[in-house]
Length: 114
Image (cartoon, rainbow, N blue to C red; front, side, top):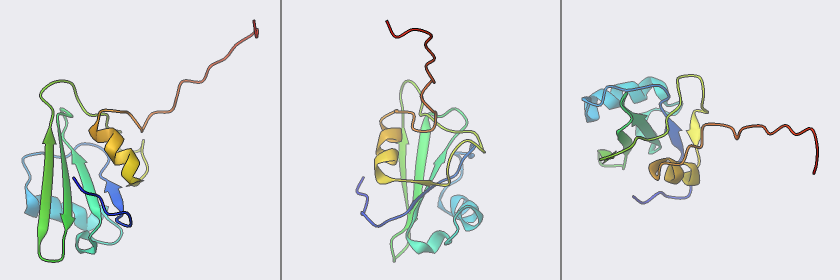
């Protein structure tokens, strides 16, 4: 998938019914995206099983819907209040590869240096 450098990428946290197609997802985008679904920004959705991610965007002539389904394992995905509303291109690429960008690294606590 090609991501333009200046395109904003929003994430719909929580889980979305993956039976929804362009029209249903565009309705969700109406409230989930600050700029609205016709802005050209991408909105990323994930289903409850976390096997499917869909990306909805407007390309000046109509809506486009991109989908990736994993045959094994699952995508990292935040609960409703665990993630920012916006992702960078690099973060989205990492999510699509299965890297969890939503969780902090575990804080290490040591009592001795050596």
